[in-house]
Length: 372
Image (tube, rainbow, N blue to C red; front, side, top):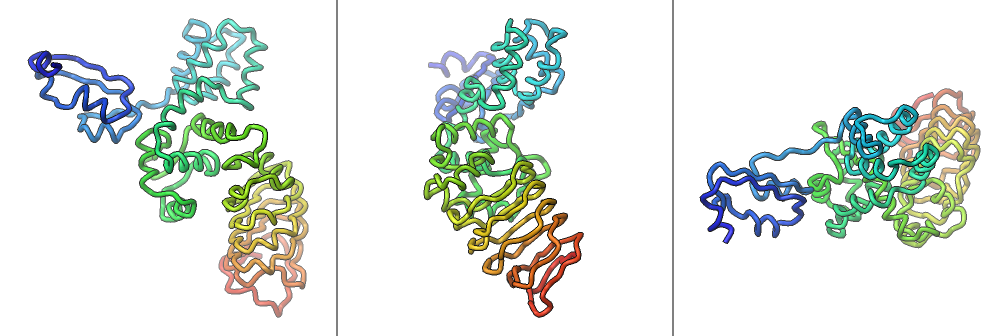
């Protein structure tokens, strides 16, 4: 009927928020349905879906730059294009939090409309602890449309990966070690859940990252050890110290990364996480002690203690047969005792800035990049 009615008419059609092939097929399967000169605009979260239907031009909507973001926020919060004088700094705080996402700007602005300045400050503090549910629910629509393996990859990236990753063979090897597939990276990019720059860097919007972490937190709000992933320093430390983690958490935890954790004084007992492969404590300037249990981690490959300026001694590492990288640049460690703490497996060793005493009869293997 649509083809019969419109095939001889020049029409302008907007299909908003398309999310499935079935929708496009039902509404606009063939260009011949519409008369010459017709134009159609389709808004969609999935760029692959648009390519499948051979659309002429795909335009990626960019994040709002700061000036326009402030205008949009102000229209919702003040019904003006600029904030009130007393609210300028707080308005910018919310604009920075939203990072150019129109949805977040409108939700936050509307919520703060005609509220006192103390309420604004309280909401700002609250956002640091608890994400806005309206924003999270809206963002989760794209997540809910993923297949299970794609969901797992997204949550791993939101909870466990750093802000930016370069796509190379090492990155894909890491993905595969987590049980993921390369094709799923493409799917997340196509659905705008992660971004890929022209230089090959992957990144995720902070609010999407926050949404993924909130999904995991909701798995068990009261007990972090019962969740599928640990991403918060306090939660991780609590689970390891109290031994409240599930077997899945313990068995799957491969990287212990507490980079620049200023309040870390000692590492917890690590005997409950036998599959750890990396321990990265760069910049933990208050760290005074590495728990001796580290010596039992048979699969540990990398130990990084750079800039741990309060650390004066090491536990026995001689049983770490898989350890290949040991970095302790700018620490207070003055010597490697004669009990031969360093395993022969090490091929990358960095301990700079101190004169070290070693047992001259102990062969620590073919060192690469050895610095004194």
